[in-house]
Image 1 (tube, rainbow, N blue to C red):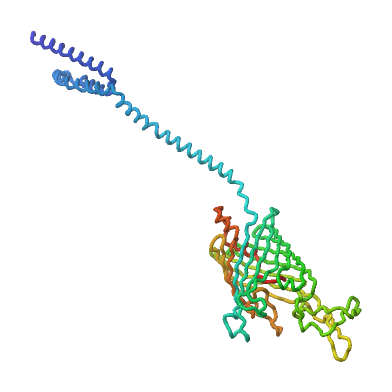
Image 2: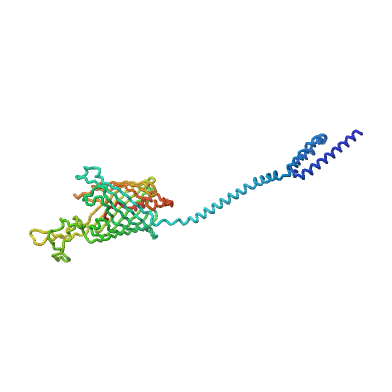
Length: 471
């Protein structure tokens, strides 16, 4: 019993000492701030069976005290704990800040995009002189390549330069002018004007397109022509007024086909019914003064001859009626095909009475105008292909039945072939859209037009080559 009592007392003493050590350790850990990491260690001895815990606390107590002292030495510096807290804060808070930043950036971009769209809604005003063209054309007669095609070899190589400016005054239409000159590289038929630049007549149009919907357009046009060419000046022309109406149908399903049907009437105001030259012509200058007639057939004996400077036997054109059809197709990309056919019905001035000296009469014999008609018919037909290399450069190559107009009938009264005539020519034309070139050089960008739109604007929907005078 004594041994049992001593054993119990010894166990109680050891238990009390262990409890004191554990309490002191708990107080130290509370002061150092490492309490959260130690509950598992302190709970382990409590969960151990009492029978096995008799020796375990005695042996393991020094081991458990060592960890208690290490946190005490490392815990005071807040540097080690601060990174842990900061890391936790960064790990939790950073995603929300980034998400908020992305959201704010997206909302800012959306708001700025909407603001930009609102600001860009009113498109910049286009330049008023858009669709202004410069044309450089070379045309060569087909007979130039075949010497045997003519009894007398007469080659022709002609160059043409023209500027076609436009101006949009804000009325829904536009003003268009056409001024150019031609130069024959080969010898001319008369050899009098070899390689001399010859001006064309100046043409000024006002065009007002009307959109009828469903691909239909109407383009009424008013024209004024100022005579600047040698032929018009020689014909004593003052001014030409003309009106034109063009009906257009655009068919995208048929290879972007554009059909243009036009009609035009023009009238020349002139001071002479024939072409006159400064040099007297032997065929029309009689040796003596010829009495001319005035109104009512009354003779005016000593009046000067009116036909002394007449050049040629034809009267000049007074009325012109034009009908034509132009078809342009853009089947592949910037590649286009054009077919144009025009019929010119011209009415010349009446002939003045002619006086002829005869041996049987002292007075010259008078011959009045006995022409059955003063109508003369001409055509212009061309077939060409073109390619839009850039927004401002177009190159076209084609064939035409004449450089200006071709007669309908040959000298024998037979009809000419519509395309192949004695004056048939091949042509190569470079067209520069000046405003598009300006926009590209200035960095403003182009209008984003399709190739068929550019082709239609370049052609004016229906036009042909023009040299010298105007019908």
